[in-house]
Length: 115
Image (cartoon, helix red, strand yellow):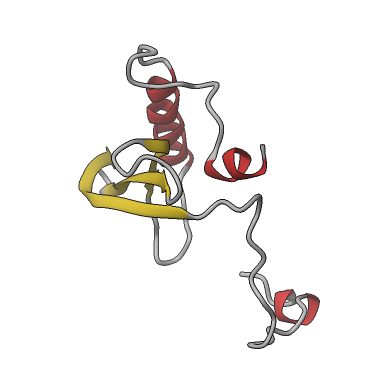
């Protein structure tokens, strides 16, 4: 997809240390296995994941950020407008759920770490 990307990235060095942001270390739990159908013909299914982050220095049983995501793919990357619209519709419906289920103003995992 990105033929020039390799030329634009700095080479990876094994000796380069990973920088910990704000002394935060997360324990990540990823729950997968659910899916839903976006389109019947051609059939398009979306795979779902629930990702929870727990602060290693905090309470072990209380997540600090939980994120729901879904993805769908096509081997030829030929996505129809209808499939894209239906994926967007699902995303919109999720955002409209009650505040007991969804905090649409909540931070992403990255924003949580850097805030």
